[in-house]
Length: 181
Image 1 (spheres, rainbow, N blue to C red):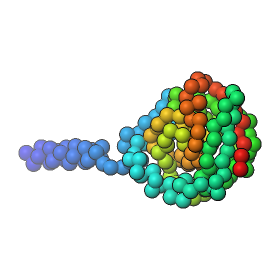
Image 2: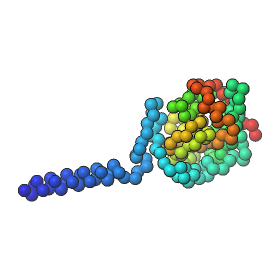
Image 3: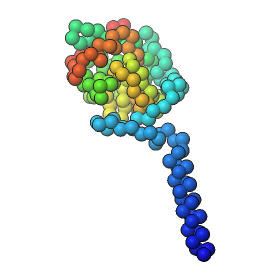
Image 4: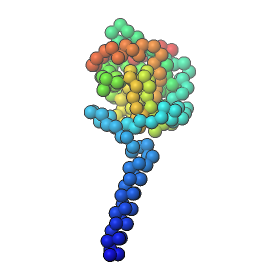
């Protein structure tokens, strides 16, 4: 009789601990989202968390440095943030690359050189118009639709004008990126 009681107690403890583990508040493991192309773990989070995680790495502009993205006789202007990753990216300019459409949410390009991640946040929650670097894959990202938190995402700047132009172009597009001041 005692053995049967112990089995039920152990089963109860196991079930309770499994339930508590599954309901825990570990944002790095909860609600993990993977896309068709396996764009690493992307965890939805509170947008206010993003501002805190950006700190000095994404909230200040790089001395009013702007870049211009040109394609199909159109221009998109980006105000760059003042952080080591943004400054490293600026050393690559001018660039002529092809942006690929990814998940009908963003345009991406795999850079030939990894950018600095010194002082970078662990990740960020991108908004429409964010010009970013996804460090796990080494790709440039332009968000033309809202997306959830991504580990390893570093904001480089914010598009000031023309973001709607990316949404209206399906598929890949050749672009030129250059500093304008």
